[in-house]
Length: 225
Image 1 (cartoon, rainbow, N blue to C red):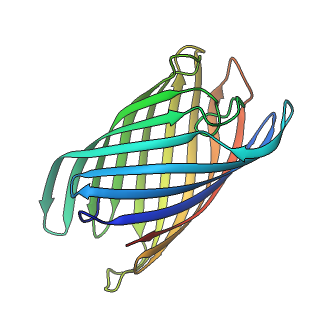
Image 2: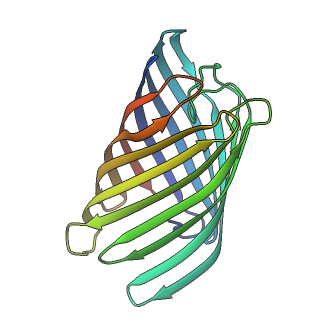
């Protein structure tokens, strides 16, 4: 969700991912800046520690630069609907570990559209996009959908506990591999600080090349200023 123009958000969200080939702990430091009320730019500087069948080590993972532009918004009484264009440029600063969205060691560009509806009773988001990897074989067509449910009455200063549910569908077009993942999370927001905890697992997957995904645990926090 875009905040006011000139605002910043600092975010850290760690992912502990387990696959058939081992485990990786991914900790990105993200800085988000809103030049205007409709635009957002963020930089992701990630650290990784990995213990895989093929390699063990730690260091810098693939850095990312993300841009968003809100091209549509309609507000109602205590509700809003918005649509954003989104791009993520992934730089090959990490090792070639075959860890999608973490460390591929290859440039990729993601281009998609994000839509979101928010009210006092529910939040619904969806995202559709394509990740293009010109020098690799992991082009991905993906769709995500999520629902957030507030458990407390709205109040000021902000004090809210939310449950959220998300599905992610990914088709690796060149490898003809498919994944359907589900994530269950909980979020607590107090004033300008937010804490997140979620667990992701596979519902169905058909992987022709590379290791299968088992689970991910996410722990994070962010601060708006």
